[in-house]
Image: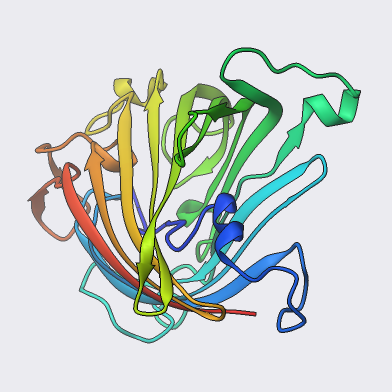
Length: 285
């Protein structure tokens, strides 16, 4: 099986972090569509069966307006030509583009109904779409998660969002679960403003994906579940932001940790459980 190990990562901010920006300032292109260009360096990411390092370019956007809540990014893998031997990108016959978007549509606002109760503030039709263009269809991912989301009132400065999805899988690097409904995802997001530091705003941002119920468990070297949990310290200014990220993978990409595989270049042991790291520098405009 051919596989292109790519880095996905919503690394610099969640939609809540709009509060840390001077959103209505004429310094920005839009007062509600918050966007930035980032340079991201990654080390030992584990979305594939082998460790991956990369330095890439990213466009990132987030927004919350009326009934529409959005987060998304577009990556250009290996844009700067730096990475390890497993890393392929736009200039060396790898994928030219990787994107992930998370649009949510408020059921409360679209129906004119207050569905809040207890700590549940608002309800959404939630989506999480992932697309890896790949160099051809055998090296492509095309995944749509759809389900229900909500924002939680924690009665503290901590912002909390929960989403649960069913997954439809189109292309998946020729894996056995292509073109089928295959499993579920639970996503939790959290944002906590910490303090002012060096003239900027320091925040803790995190998100965790729990994937389960996939039929890939019946394929050699694969599992039916995985976890990816990101923990981010982000220092934000009006235009610049800087982030350090630690991401924990358990069976990353639904590859079974420790399994021996051979893709035609000799056997190796899958390293899909453990920590990966990122550094991000970005400009908001």
